[in-house]
Image (cartoon, rainbow, N blue to C red; front, side):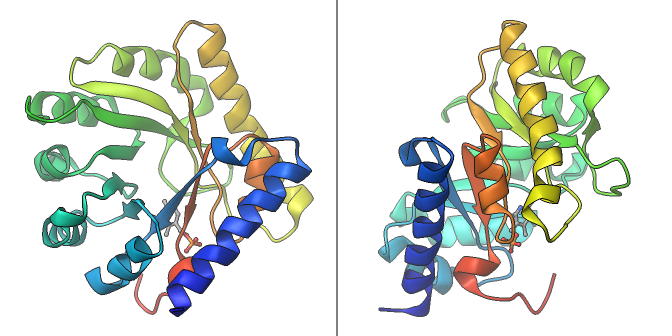
Length: 229
Ligand SMILES: *Cc1c(COP(=O)(O)O)cnc(C)c1O
């Protein structure tokens, strides 16, 4: 067994255990393997071990890997910061985008999504940590932006994503995830039918699952420590 397949098994076991502990169905939680900075060969190893969904942060790197590995028919998620001049390549290559925090970016992606492909599946990135400098729309702005994005023709709004400020302790990790879940529930109550809460990374999978994550984005625990960023 390769290190990657052993790591994948361990991460799947963590997800399974946390799901059972918090009364969730493990089948409701999708594992996204974050392969940023790792070569296509690492993605191939993970794919050989049954992993289908991969997350990338940098447009060129993601497009290169997706193109090289096209025959494997993997699902590619763009999860990094996105500038307007790069939207076309993302619209043409990726299946999902998790990091939408401006209407303009969403409009460009909708216009540029080829008709030959399924609608681009998207999440709004929300800033759930007050002191956080990471990108993301403020919680107060979520309802209006979500409504507008849901009406764009070539996008399918699936849910919300967050990268909370890193904290060590489980009980301190939960509140930021809870805020995202509450925003998600409010959108569904307001009539938007969304199903994805993209939250939880290598160090906080358990807290995210306790708060309702449906997709966890895991890099380090699968591929190892990154030496570049
Ligand atoms: C890098 C990254 C991850 C994975 O983080 P790890 O700590 O390596 O698991 C998840 N989500 C986003 C948006 C990332 O940039």
